[in-house]
Length: 206
Ligand code: URA
Image 1 (tube, rainbow, N blue to C red):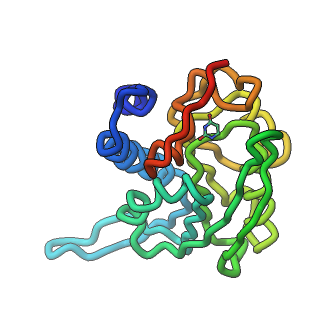
Image 2 (image 1 turned 180 degrees about the vertical axis):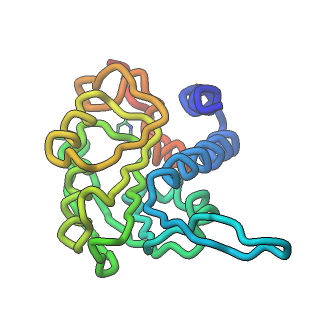
């Protein structure tokens, strides 16, 4: 299922509606995968007939989409986790140097026991990912309670996240081959934000 949805996202002929539809479906799968990593506790409930063992999430959840493309994953994650708090982080990469700079950060005060899921579809160099992780940690999150949910990751970006934040759980639907000279992921899908929001600008081939 994930592979077929990624294929739709990769295809440059996919139109805006189909791109959005595939994103929402894929984000729901990623949300289910992330749910498996959240802290829970054992509880006992009473059915109409008997007592039953069960589980209950034990902590608050904060969703942190990285603007702008992380917003594409937010609706599906909110359907899954409808009581989550949402903090936003703005990171923009310089089109020439590909270095990310932060321009916005609005996070709730985070308790070390809270779970945090960062939403960022493309892990390319890892620059904006590391910047976001630092912001979330500075807001109070414990590294081992942070999940980084993405659609496609480049090995270079994954290595950089793992080096700086070894305890963070990274969830990605697919790991691609490498980055090109302009730090786009190959084969990738182009610029995720442009394709999801309909602001497509052509990307020169490698
Ligand atoms: N961001 C994207 O949207 N695509 C890439 O290939 C790299 C970063």
